[in-house]
Image (cartoon, rainbow, N blue to C red; front, side, top):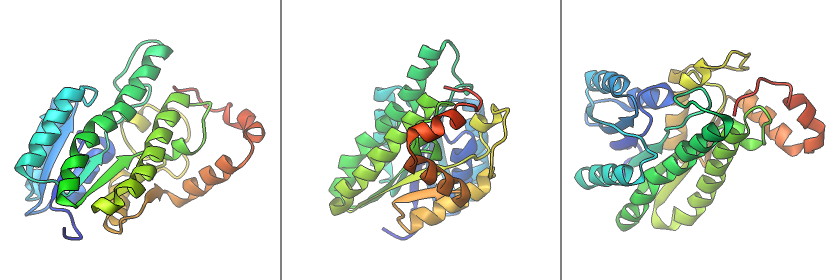
Amino acid sequence: MSLEPQTILITGASSGIGRALALEFSAPAITLALCGRNPERLAETVKSCRSKGAQVSGQPLDIQDRIATAEWVTEVDRQTPLDLVIANAGISSGTGITGNEEEQTRDIFAVNLAGTLNTILPLIERMKLRQRGQIALLSSLAGFRGLPTAPAYGASKAAIRSYGEGLRGRLASDGIKVSVICPGFVRSRITDTNDFAMPFFMETEKAAQLIRKGLKRNKPRIAFPWQSYFLMQVLSALPLAWTDGLLSRGPKKI
């Protein structure tokens, strides 16, 4: 496997970080398999990536559908064995889900956590047989400490971080690299719904560049921006009783 992946699968590629990553990796001799829930936005991403010389296929898909997702990722890997899989797709309250708090909470876990598992689990055994491959899981800095402002979203991302970091050690002897990506506030459909201040806000293009560099170095955790990462590490180290009151004052999501 070369230092730069040649065949890449990205979920949630119709907008935000997923779209930016697809464009960042797009180049002649690169093969991309992209999926997203919105066919129109996905088609725009596919077109833009092809204009940069990449060979691209797009699949409208809801990664909550375990069977459909498994069939898609397995067929892609059969046709062009994957070097890199980026399980990027995710939601928060206000991005494509409606209903009461219970429904939204269940949807967040179904997409962010179960959808990630639906994406990567069918590919792990195939990568083991090849003794090579790389998996990237999209967590968040929100997963470093339970947040009263977004308990479901933060918990779903905490689960992804913990699982990915454990999976890295488990699969290392099989030649499979695993990295967990932990962004702060990055422009996306999720942040577009926020009507509050977002410290150290970052554009998707910059985020995609940082992620690509981190994956090339096989970093266990790709966390950014550094200021927000440092702050979340401090908060996670402090007793909950010291910070609950302060964090509870923020805007309430789910």
